[in-house]
Length: 231
Ligand SMILES: Nc1c(N[C@@H]2O[C@H](COP(=O)(O)O)[C@@H](O)[C@H]2O)[nH]c(=O)[nH]c1=O
Image (cartoon, rainbow, N blue to C red; front, side, top):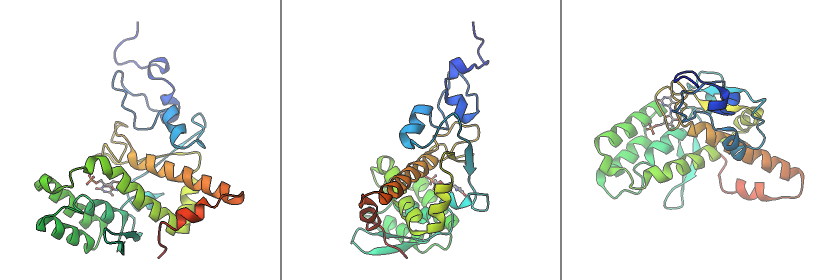
């Protein structure tokens, strides 16, 4: 019989083959998507050959994958006008309060819009969320992944070098190596859900699909490109 604290591949399953991590049993919340999940997100990944690219701070290798990287994005606002956000982080933090009919929330969005750095945007957004959770848009938990997806799609569409960088990681598992953030990041010991890594892998797969169909007959790429504005 297996002792508690000793982990075997049989107990853990093939997850171990991509992560290289032995997760404690029975705490099986994986940082890195399981083999099945991974190929559902990005069919180009071969779990048995994939390596892992960790990113976090903007000055790290692959730091441009961080939401704090200084890449402005242009997104349509509620009035149908384009607004330039200084980073994905600006857009993400502001959307915690966008559409909330309260002067404090409206001011907060304006403060985030005019904040000079992603760190400042994040400080303002997080502080307001902590102090006034009643001002966070009520469905935030269910829409935040979509908000992030839209911002990332814009970022990786309008900067060709970022798009190439993302495509150059094909076959690798991407993990935001945030030690604290257990939703967007992988956590300190692989206990996080790594949703930022997942979205980037999803986008990579979509871009790859687009470039493949572009060489064929599909025009969907152009249609999708029309959804985002180039700077
Ligand atoms: N890259 C990076 C972080 N990670 C980012 O923080 C955001 C999560 O914010 P929240 O939902 O307010 O907790 C999300 O964009 C995630 O990618 N956090 C940092 O303090 N520094 C950093 O360099």
